[in-house]
Image (tube, rainbow, N blue to C red; front, top):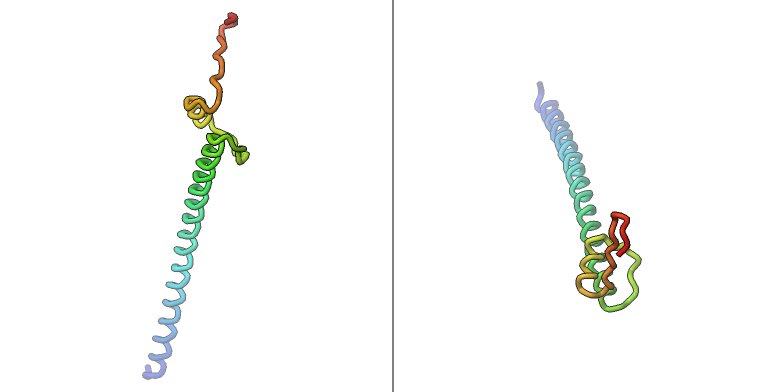
Length: 94
């Protein structure tokens, strides 16, 4: 095998390896970006929920985000919402 042929094969193999590495890097970056976007969405929703609760506490209009039962209970316990009367479920009248 001549030096020129060996050099060509070596350069070709290097190019193949670099292409494989670039493809792997692209796959890793894609996965990282996907996870980052998911985390950003969760963080954004958490911040919006917190802002929504703060606005309700100040007596402002809600952002239109439905409250969870836990959030409703917390606002009720804080006195922001009036306490709901507890009705018996056994058919008797209060």
